[in-house]
Amino acid sequence: EKTAGGSRNRYRAVLDRLTFYEKAVVTWFYLDGATWEQISGRLNYSPRQCRNIRDKALDRLTSWFSANKAIFTFKFPEK
Image (tube, rainbow, N blue to C red):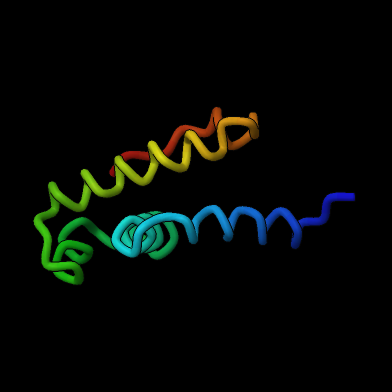
C-alpha cells in the first residue's frame, strides 16, 4: 500500500541525492519563489551559473524520476 507520506519520503530521499548547491537552487527557486538575483546573492554565483545549476539538477531529477509518469511528463515553469 502506498501512502502520501511514503511517497513524500521517497521523493525527499531522491532530492537528498542532489548536491548542496543543486538542492539549494531548486528549493529556493521552486519552493520559496526566490529570484535568480536573490539565489545568486546567497550562493555568490552569477544568476546564469545558478540557472545552469538548476538545469543540471532538473536533468538529474528527470533521470531518477523517469519511471514515474506523472513526474516525468511534468513541465517545470520558466521564470
